[in-house]
Length: 404
Image 1 (cartoon, rainbow, N blue to C red):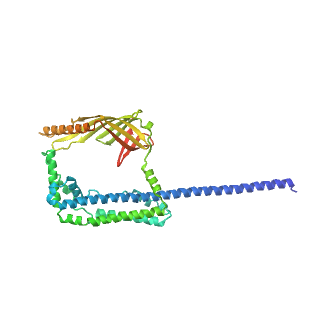
Image 2: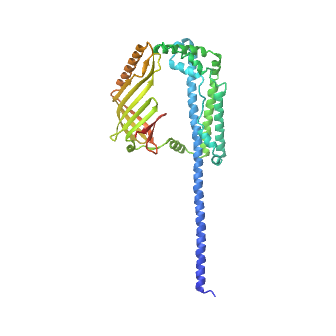
């Protein structure tokens, strides 16, 4: 017979076991719930990033096409002006003639867009199929289809093909090696005016010009449709302008913030095979730049390179995410080395005169700068290794590498 005390112990054990089971079940349930919530949040964030990537791609396409339209209208206006003044073409400004020429001469390269974001979008079916809005997906697919259709039309349609082949420009650039620089420029200007006078009256050119309004209309409609489409996209995905600005800023950052203590030292800049610089940044916020630049002198009377070595002193500072460099023109020096330029037979005097004029004009330029300081502000960031710096100024990007 089981005693009362044994019954109590058994009852207590069952209660503890039941509590343990219930606690475990609740714990497992909470773990799954939290895990699912985290997974859903990650999924939602990935979807929003995909949506913002595509919206940004559409915005960039709009800006690119706007630039194309502005360029086309500027060239077209210059062309019309030149046509209306063909009898006075010798008196027209050089920049107007060059714009007219660029409007009718075919580009050597096909027009294109950056397709990388489109490829990412189409290569992730699990992402874009679950974006939560079929209308948004339809909009994106429609945009990419329309953009490709525009590219095909721009690069292949006869109504978009410029009438003058690039190879025909050899008529303008014809040069006799006996010519001086002044004679060559005079010949170029004469040939340019004759070339334009002939080509702008050609029937093929006239047909191309007559379709200008139609082409600009297509571009304008494309811009308006993309803007309307993207406004709807932002609404469908509940993406604010602030979110888009944050996204654009995040993808623009390619490194970590540049700190003063990390900048101290000597850095090398190589923008090309013929141009190198070394920057030394010191703790007292002074700096020195030493540069070597070589220019190819492919002239009618000489061949080779003119090498220039320059040094300048200045100051530096870091403000926010920008590197500020201020150079003192009173501490600027330049030396020329013409030992690698060789005059063609019988033309040493022509080379000597050109070198003299060039160096005198450069000295005049520097003297005009004396007494002033030149400030240069660049967006700056450093890579993870701490041995490379990226400097951005408008559309120009430059990289510096730490000198060991």
